Length: 293
Image (spheres, rainbow, N blue to C red):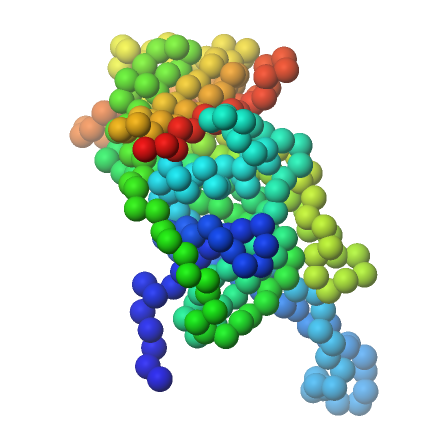
């Protein structure tokens, strides 16, 4: 049988092994990575003895990349942040949700269980869509025969674009021109194995929310250089049609980094790399999504 094109692959997530949420994906690298324990005893020869090898633990980890539409984000945000939606609000939680992830790789269909999001990176650059890269960690891998991926109906709506934030990328309540941004939620996951060859628990150890913004440095942006240590509020609002997506950071704290001139051509850029932190009882990040067309 001849090889099939990558475009025949599919990916879905769900709360059970029969996944029920289809996701259009750009690429994936979620894999089982196995190790062997090798006997290092001395037995009179220099070669290694095959009979002395034992299977050791295996890790399940990798990346999933998307250009998500609003309906897909509604399914991905609780997995990333931890809390289910309350109306249109998605909040951070101290515990994280896990999912089954099934990937149809044509020759076989692979299902991974206990998968949690270790790091989520939202990014967009001038003229481009909102992209989402997830670093994930799971527990086990189960291969199944080709053709066993469930029949699912994919959403047909479009992704958000950076241009959807025009006039609505607010730093300290001021509209800001942005050529690119990256928002990272890092859950610092630790898989524990103990007396098992597969991960028994996957523990979120800490959390960090980082925001990087590239903007031109003109008279309109001078106030963004050397922001006060106390930090400023940031609101990033995407809007197209009836869809909207808002990232809100109550306190974004940015160590100063001077703008510089790298050559004759182009704008003088200002790179802002900071961390979003809690402000009193307000969490470091809140996401609001209206995914209804």
